[in-house]
Image 1 (spheres, rainbow, N blue to C red):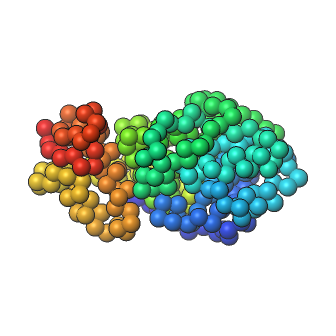
Image 2 (image 1 turned 90 degrees about the vertical axis):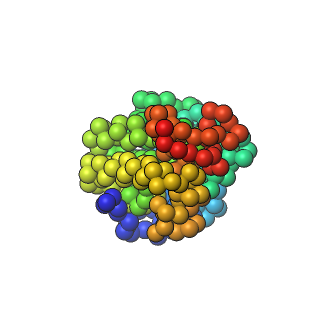
Image 3 (image 1 turned 60 degrees about the vertical axis):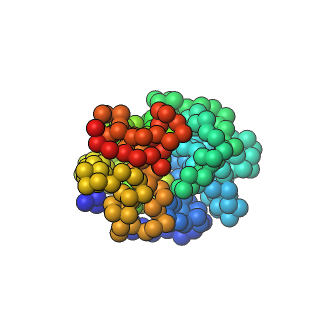
Length: 302
């Protein structure tokens, strides 16, 4: 069982000091994929960086501007280009007088992937500076280092704060829920590799973009990974029982889950099946793309 953490004190639009050098403002965009809403982080004092400005909501922009009054924003960082993380970056940068926006190179996606049953992609997002793994930015008393964590999306970055031995984990690791991995941009092999990388980082605290921090990090990450592998074993079990399609698998494995989440759950099942296909455990009859089985494909054990 994953030791989820879901309780925390916040109010929409309020700027809370949550740790030394870290403040958070939560946007009012609650939902089945965003929990209570997007938590935008302000790192530092005096000269600061902003992480994940969030959705394009005027009240959230106003709250961030009030929280940043009297300070110099040196950088705006974005963990990935989903629509609950990236769209407010440009309006905030412009309102602050042209602050540079930093993120990984956005994925090249078709318009049909803008809405994936999760929060969708911000197809208009373009950073001013492309970050790659290990890139650092600094301010007075703080350092942020880009940590490539692909899987949830191909361009997902987390940001380490060495002064606090902390990691802003974006959507890669969340305390309130597991993370959705949606092909073709999301990849389960990459996700599991990134999870292991974070585990090896030995961080004392994880600050997800949604929900409260994770402070008992090591056992949480073990449980997080074990859940993924157990889900994969359940999928294999359904194939052994005679299921051949994702439409047959999801109602069984996610019977206790809100049905609004079933479309996204189906995509995560697909991500597992693609991984199993790569490893020679499952055979998928593709639909459309000969190299990538889809939701309507039929699957069987090899």
